[in-house]
Image (tube, rainbow, N blue to C red; front, side, top):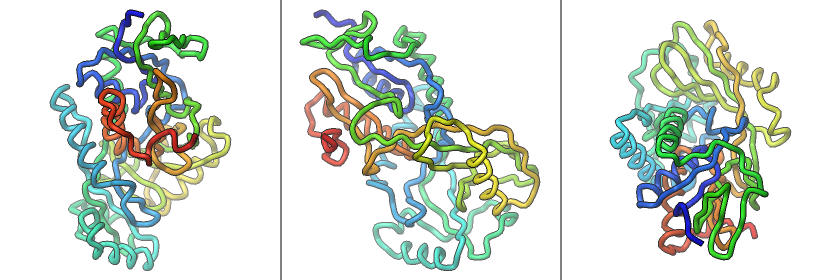
Amino acid sequence: MPFTHDALIIGQGLAGTVLSETLASRGLSVMVFDARQVGSASHVAAGVVNPIVLRRTLPSWRASEMLAVAGAYYRELELDQEADYWKPLPFVEIFPTAQEAAIWQLRMRDAEHKHMLSSAPVSDASLEKLPQPYGYGVVLRCAWLNLQAMMADHRERLIASGALEERIILESDIIRKADGIEVLGRSAPLLVHCGGPFNTVPGLVPVRGEGLTVRLPGLGMNCMVHRGAFIVPMGDDVYRVGSTFAWDDVWSGPTDEGKRHLLDRLHRLWSGPIEVLDHWAGVRPASKDRRPIMGRTGPHEAVLSGFGARGGLLAPWCAAHLADHLLNGKPLDPEVDVQRFA
């Protein structure tokens, strides 16, 4: 059948945004279907890009490679769109115990980790206002990614070019034919499911995360800080605080329990006044083995999902890797291939 597009994408969260941008940059005509469903983590995520698994003080999966690809992708996108999405910021880990401080020093001596960890002081006087009896360490090469602005700008470009259909796609809307896929009159040889937690693919685990937007008058902090919860500066003494992890009742939205948990963590760091401006929740598309999920799910269908809490770090590499596979036949890394759950 004659096709109206080269690729159809369901979902315009982080995965759908970066994949559609990646495919378009390679010369493909793309049609995106998205209704901005309530519950997607991409629309509320704080945007912390951190290559370290803090509870173990170890780099996340292929951290150096992911950082290099992510930084290059977002900086190129900024130049192309004359926008400001990617902001390198120090990430300070305040040690809760002497043992944690000792582990940090040990990791710093490891050749694999030393380029990501530091104990050098951060030039931010506000840190003196936070209790740190065991000191702090600094995660290097971190950044804050303005996810919401990036996705909103991309959505505007899609709308302006007639490449976005704002509606929920039901299974009955997808017509599978011998040579391609048709959705609401749009057709292509390829359909990629980027619905995040709304996808139903093997290995996907939805995880609810909650966070707060708060005003902390007098703190004046310009770096990201973590001790049981992270604090991200948004300007004018407004901060985002997060986040929780819950595997049950993931679609319940913000909860009193989640709010209490975050405020308890915040009180351990800040003894001054706290004004809660917003309490939000989103469902992350995680995976059983904490690796991204991508690859073909049918003759003309594929999926891109499973970023968990590290979408900003993982999305550019994953989109490029999937594009190389779908367009050029490059084999998928077995660690991310959806077929590992078959």
